[in-house]
Figure 1 (cartoon, rainbow, N blue to C red):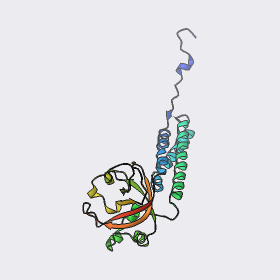
Figure 2: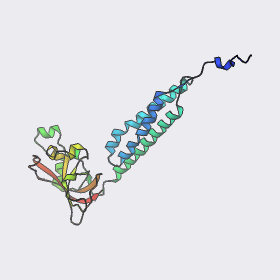
Figure 3: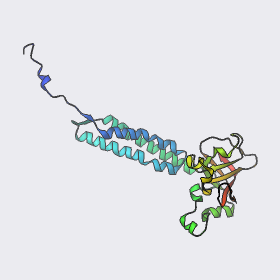
Figure 4: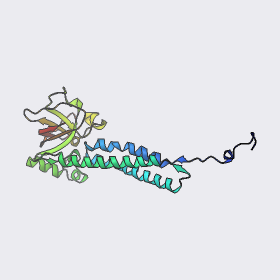
Amino acid sequence: MTQFEAPAEADEPLEYRSVHTFAVLGLLLGLLSVVVVFMARISFESTMVLAPIPIAGIIVSLIALRGIRATPDLYTGKPLAQAGAALSALFLVTGVGYAGYVYATEVPDGYTRTSFLEMKPSEADTVNGDIIPPEVAEFIKSGEPVFIKGYIRPDSIKFKQNLNNFLLVRDNQQCCFGDLSKVMYFDQVQVKLGTGLTTDYHSGLFRLGGKLKVAPGDPRVGTPLTYELVADYVKP
C-alpha cells in the first residue's frame, strides 16, 4: 500500500442505529407518571384516573425493548426503555398503594364517607323531584356523622387564620372559584366548625367530619337549598 492509498476500513460502510421512538416515549411517560404519586394523597379516584399513564409507560417501554432485541442492528435505546419501564412501575405501585392506604385510613371512627358527587341528584332523582339523593337524605335525617373532603373557597372568608365558618367546594379549579352564581348547590357545603374548633386557610385539601344539614337557599346563588356541615373534625 502506497502513502496515497486509504486504509481498507475506510471503504466499509459506517453502522448507524437510531434510538427507538418508543424508548424515548416510554421514558417520558415514566417521568410523567410521578403525578400519580402526587395525586395519591388527594383522592383514590383521581389516582386511578391517572393510573393509565404509568400503565402506558410500561407497555410502550416493553414494546421498545422487544423491538430493540428483535432488530439490534437497526435500533438502540435499551437503557432508555428500561428506565421508562422501571419508573412507570415504581410510580404506579407507589401511587396506587399510597392512595389505597390513605383511602382506607383517612375516615375517623364513627364517620361515614360521603362526597360532593354523592350529593348531586341523579337524573332519576330529578325526575322524581328529589333534589337531595336518598342516601344523603338519610344522613341528614339520622344525624349520622359524615366525612367529606374539599377546598375552602377563598372569597368565602375574610381572614386566613382561626376560621370557624367557610364555604367548602368540591375542587380548586375555576368551576368552583369562578362566578358564585354559577356554582350549583351540590358543589358546595357551608361549614360551621364546632365550639373551640378552628382552622387556617390554605389552598390544599381539607378533610372534615360532622353532621350534615340542609339550610335555606341563598338567593344570590338562586338555589333551593344549601348543604351545611356542623363539623367537629377538621384536618388540613
